[in-house]
Image (tube, rainbow, N blue to C red; front, side):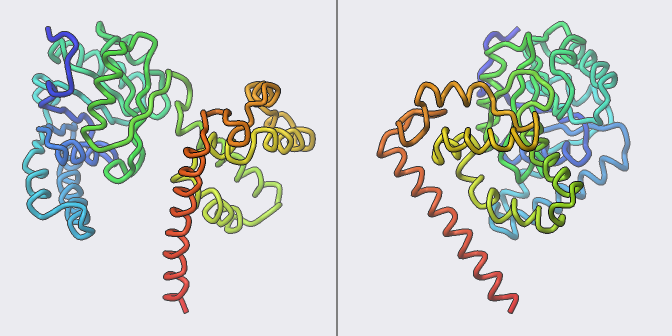
Length: 323
């Protein structure tokens, strides 16, 4: 048994599931230099995965994200099989991305536990199910972790690490290091419904649909509002940074007004009220959700403004082309 396996010990990755997510995760791992075995139950799914990987690698070459040689090398590191046991028996890291069926996932993780080496980390790409429940089907819940990728996974940077109740800190740390090796951006969340991204996205999507349902604006205008405001800032400034920049007291006043007029779904969190009470208002007091100095605040604002200016230049080009 390998104790405290390090990221350098990961040599072979098994990707179980070759659908929309699985084949793309496989090629991300192969691009990063790992030997990958991609497995699914149906030959037609496997062939479609091979075709898609070839096409997606060609697109990366066309857009100068990879050289032709790098694409060929990545492709050469991916093996495919219809026999799941062949894919997982020597794997150091297994990623599952089958359909969202909790009973099937538990069954498959039981197989992983029985057939994989003792040191193997077992990860699930579920976007909804409890990691703790999936892990309970194994005798190694400390080595079971959520690894939620965003679609399309070969392009989207974020990978959420979800820690089940018995997932060890060593497993979380190793998974984080592995994701960095894949040149992705890891974040960590405790096991809970919706994790991080789905829950944040749900809040925006549900409110957008509610606004449409109330007849307040058209679908096009709702989407344009997001794309031309939040969409311009959010790659650089997250929601908590936004509150710190704008002033926590300002946001509390605004949200109290919404709460009074639109009901409980806009009830300001207790943490927001407590921070305002303690004068933790963000940039203007030097402390909010983050610690701020004059220099760090200036750098953040400069980074934001330069990003938006870059997006505005691209928009100006598009508008000129449309004329």
